[in-house]
Length: 200
Image 1 (cartoon, rainbow, N blue to C red):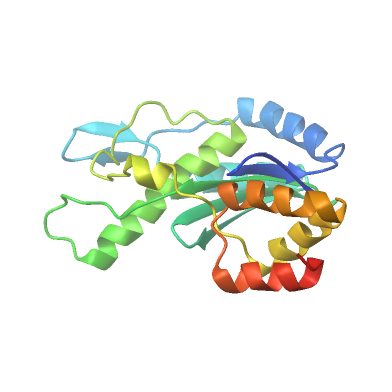
Image 2: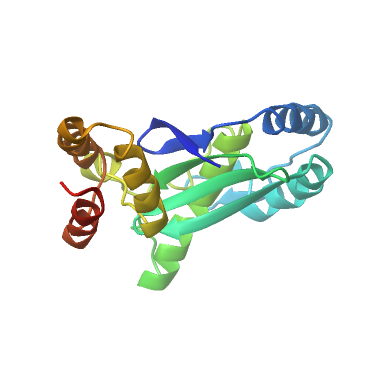
C-alpha cells in the first residue's frame, strides 16, 4: 500500500479504514488490562515498566484485534510499525544511541540497553500507552544532531520515490527531487540510479 508521510519519521498506509477500528478496539481492551511496574532503576530508585512486561500484556490484545507490531533497526533508527491483517499500517522512526555511564557494562550491553529503551518508548508512543515518567534511560545521550538526522532511503522506498517523481512534468522533476534530497539522506549511488530512471 502506498505510504503517506506526515513528517520525515512518521508514516502510514494511504488507506486506514480497517486499521483505525482495530486500534479503537485495542484501546478498549487495553483499558481493562493492568500494567504493573515490574523493574526498578537501582541508580535513580524509581520503578518502571519493562519491555517484556508491556509485550506480554499487549500481544494477546493485539492478536484479538487483528494487529501485530514489528520493530526493526534501520541504521541509527528504530522503526516501529503497527500492521493490520488487511495490510494497512502506521509507523515511526526513532533515533537511538547506546546507554552510557553504566558501570560494569561492556559496549555491546550498552548498545542493547539503548535499543531496549528505544523499543519500549517507541512501542508505547505508537499505541498511546503511558509508561509514566521513568528515567532509566537518563544516561542515553541523544544529541540534537542525531534528532535532526535525515532518514535514509531503502531500495524499496527508492522505487516509490521514482514513481512519485514520474507524476511530475520533466521541468518540475528536478525541483521536486531537490526538495526530497533536503528531507532524506540519499547516497550517491541511489541518486545516480534515480537520475537514470527518470532521465534527469
